[in-house]
Amino acid sequence: MNSNWFIIVNPRAGGGKAKKDWPSIEATLQKHSIRYRHAFTDHKYHAVELTVKAVNKGYTNIIAVGGDGTLNEVVNGIFIQKKLNPSDITLGVIAVGTGNDCFRMYGIPSTYEDCIKAIADRHTFKQDVGMVEYYESMVQNHRYFANAAGIGFDAEVALRSNRLKERGRRGSLLYFISLLKALVAYRHSTTAITIDGRTFEEKTFSITLGIGKYNGAGMMQVPNAIANDGLYDITLIRKIGKLEVIRNIPRLFNGSILSHPRIQTYRGSAIEITSNRPIKLEADGESLGESPFRFTIMHEAITIIVGSNYAASTASN
Image (cartoon, rainbow, N blue to C red; front, side):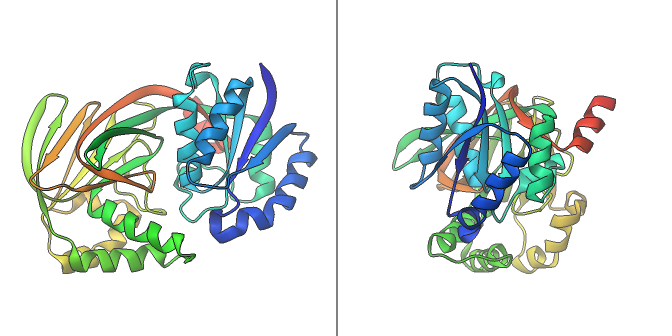
């Protein structure tokens, strides 16, 4: 096996920041004596292809340079390759995107210097990975994800945000602009939800299934999620008024949203969701297809580089 790192760089991440900063990232990698080869992505899903090729060439250490979407593509590449057990592959992240929710979860330093030092120190954590089956143009597909999936309103917001990014729009307000626009047109759905064999029906605004506790660029809709317990944390927001949504936006970021009377929380490993009309899905911020959905989870299925403080806290538990 190849002990060097293979680095996959999304040059468009962060509005072109990855491409602009790559010389600085390279210099820091060399400073910390990290041996590597790299490739730039040039189209959607290219990171999936590059990951599969890298593993087939014997690489067991991969770094994603980009945002949550780049990381998601690399994770999918790790799981569709057939050469190695995915848990035998170590994944590092150098974040230059706009969401970077994985960084928040694992206490990975935000500067290139500290982040690359964390990779060199090789503090690792085995986390769960989710898999969702969904429909796109009436064809069933599936996708792996490492952090969180959103159904309903969350997916509508992600779709609008991603469309703006495709048009070259960037900035910290992008998500809030998309949220407000989605809120104007969004309609609730009636959903039937089965969690580990128990079925119930709700008029639903949105559903979040979390492995990690952060999504949507720092929101905590599943603040109690544990990334290696073999379970999804599930937050269901029942039918709710639009002004009530706006009033409670701050609570999404401080974790207190779970105390709202229109919210129910659950945990489970096998989830099926159907609806009275097709509703949308996003996973790790990537817009996917429509209902019906089936979620499963793989326990401690991938090895990821984490910050030293996070590694110390998990070792002491």
